[in-house]
Length: 359
Image 1 (cartoon, rainbow, N blue to C red):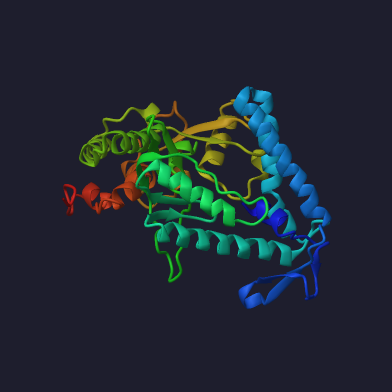
Image 2 (image 1 turned 90 degrees about the vertical axis):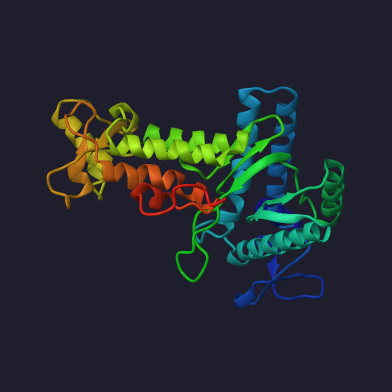
């Protein structure tokens, strides 16, 4: 979206100018206003070519899927998506803070205007971020017609795409950390008419979570999306919590896997996977950058000991730390899912209150 805005509104160092009769005026809020000439700037011109190439390879890939065409399409997409950050990076040759700020301002303006058009058409918005909108639709034909109308009103090469029609979705709300909204963005799971699930922002794709946490989250999301059965999902969650507390979970399922992204000597903070890597070296096990380190968090005699003191390699003796796996792996992985249904999984785990779904 940002790259399309940069091209459509000709935002670049070369087109940035003082206010003139024909210049584009962009309101930057507290920063005042920025002005850009209509004469095509080098940066926006070369970016337009990059976007055209991306579209070209994307169409070719749709007709003849291959790894080469996919790689080419993704390469141009990556370059295009980096354009906004490049404009706002002070060390860039074509750095222009005003152009970057204008792209962000025009993106906000575009998404807000689009939301209002969708609302005016009688649809309920259920999710929105910097470049997408999800809403409840009445029928496909009406939605496609609305898409055409919106695209007619967009400037230049800007275009709103229809991603898909989904039968069910789960959107995780932001948590309020301070007076201002803060928290995870793009955290949702959807299932389309063909039964294909799309997940964004959840821990199922993170390597530094144990298999048990990732599988539990995946199973719960699948139950809710495919069957609409949040009650059964809650029972599965409760069953896993009980098994953890009664030590009925296999060690292999609670192993944490983290990649060593640089040499051990370059790590300033001693994280659990670095401790595990050092233990491997002490045992004569080769360790180098890029290696995936496996370890688990064990119980210790001292309750107040640091996490790094609880790190053990897979073949070391020791019971897994119940409190750690509940509070740092399992509950965080599923807590915000059940928040959507008004269930506090932390309370259920501690046995202090709610036992069932509130309906």
